[in-house]
Image (cartoon, rainbow, N blue to C red; front, side):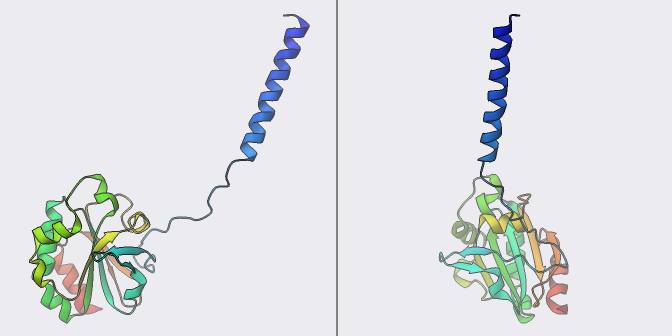
Length: 185
């Protein structure tokens, strides 16, 4: 290889490395914000959902109350059975002061399903929903914190101090745990 070609190759390589270094220095800084994940025996992760009337609601607005946050997918048959089980136990849950926030997981857990309004209508007697039941759609950040794996049927039980006491799935199969939490807290 002659000396000129060798010098040109070196100049191109050095120039390329220099350009890469400049490009890397001009990238946007990485976000320092870390995703909080809801964890048992830790405080609830502050997050917002949109209720079925279109109003944004913060989970922190339930501070001082017993709370069940139930995330579901509207295409999920076990979710329908679970909501029916919760509604059938509504008088006891209401007497024990448990507020139930039922939310469609952001993006419906990756599949297409009916709207939350249609799901409620198809699953319950929408004209007589219990007053301690609240319905809506989870924000992307709420879903990321409370349902990062897009489980179609998951719930959290949160005490009046805002501490998560349990996480479980399929309320229709675990109703006794929900009733016990409602009574004991």
